[in-house]
Length: 337
Image (spheres, rainbow, N blue to C red):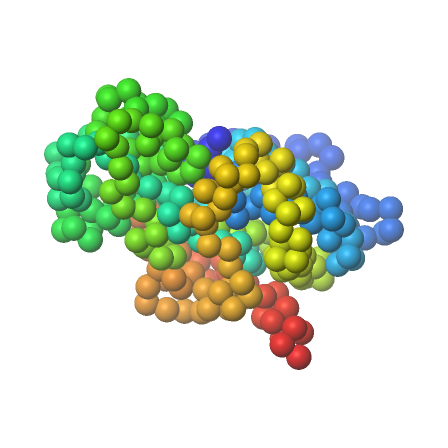
């Protein structure tokens, strides 16, 4: 599962945009309205979209949605970039990478923040962040775990030059750590569970220590925002209906969530505990300008600088139109009244 990979091959997809057969943006539902093709993948903040499909919550909001599950997260972000999806669930890192590569995407909703499910895990030989100096760290380059690592180093007065990065896909990084090939690894759930199987290993720090650094979103194409704003609004409304359904029907909701995730109830609850689902109030606050990572405009600028400094993007994209908060504001106004 590659939930949090940087988009290294987007150019291949943009080159093929003009020859995509049966582009989903032209798909029309039987009632004459557009069918939104939406992708989602394995992350506790995104799996709840399955409830909308099974409990007819999309239909209740008068929106036609073809919900597509992706076993590989990278496949979903490439599909949105190639115009094969109208909407997708993505991290802020990957959305900025897509925009930098030429895709016109808009963040319209914060599903959650990672508050512990992204971790820097160490062996018993390491007692503090300062002990990372000179160490080799296995992490998937360009991912939020790489970003989290640099945040932790900076807080301790260290930099990327003080460590050696061993670039590995997240699953391979966890395996290398368990095998004793490295003493530090950056991973996200469920690979956190795998990494902690190493005897004496422990969490050094996590996304819980850096609020707002790892936000997860509903992202739509610019075409959706400009040509189908009512459907975008319906998607946002549906998300908050999902949260209400979970609150009102926890047993039924968790049956759906665990089946979709393919895990036990206890396992899902463990991962869920490291994810803070955003309420409407949380959304309104996150979209506001600010001076720390809990503000999306601030976080986007910091993440774009990180991606550029580490050569994951060729140029810093224009971030002025990356966020559109009108849909969460409209939901809030309607429900407050």
